[in-house]
Image 1 (spheres, helix red, strand yellow):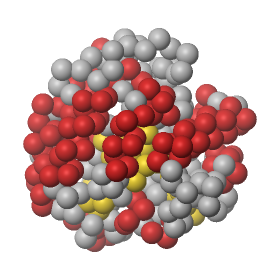
Image 2 (cartoon, rainbow, N blue to C red):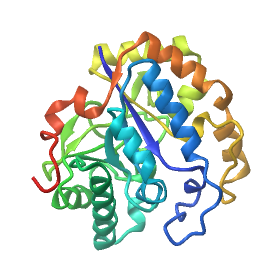
Image 3 (cartoon, helix red, strand yellow):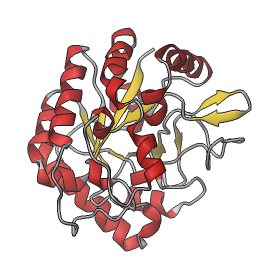
Image 4 (tube, helix red, strand yellow):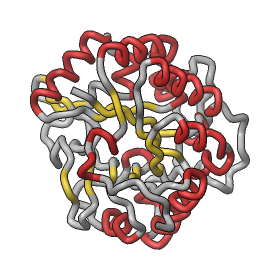
Length: 279
């Protein structure tokens, strides 16, 4: 079964208090090198991904967007400024998403169909963000976690793709059932720190129970030398550093053994025919 790989393209300084926005002085960037490593790795394994580009990164490094698109990856929106959706007024959220879509479509010449909120900050049962996404032409979202919080004693939404009240498709990241809990066991922190055989078993279980899995990671997660945002607490900084040294090797082994592609390829029902924004 072909699974989905997604990459949230943001830099190390965008994490933390959620206020690293377009008005913040820009620290030294590391996203160019880190994303290039990931794209080369994907090329080597003939894998494709959906790249959720933060607009602030796309504007600062437009060549990254063009290069990823030219290599055959799907380009989607991570918003423009890296703020949780709950920090926006409705009109501010609409403006942020629309700004990112216009930028990415200008850089690629193709319609952008997907969106993922910073911090997965659209909550199940909160309808207005989905309404806004429909208004600006987003076809699918990948922001709603099927659990409210770990350890996820109960699910709050489906684990596979489903439609929101607005008509926008929701494509959740993978949540595994494990003992009494529902947990993200194939992405991010878990992907960095858990043994690969354990992750592969969880992938197989999800494939049997639900269908294609949606795996996510960030470019900074392969950067063993990268700094941390100063607003992040010391314990969180320590957790974020775990497993970075070995993630490239682990990801290479995962891609060698399993097929991965973009959301548009694996779930064609959630996207329209790719066409230019002016078509």
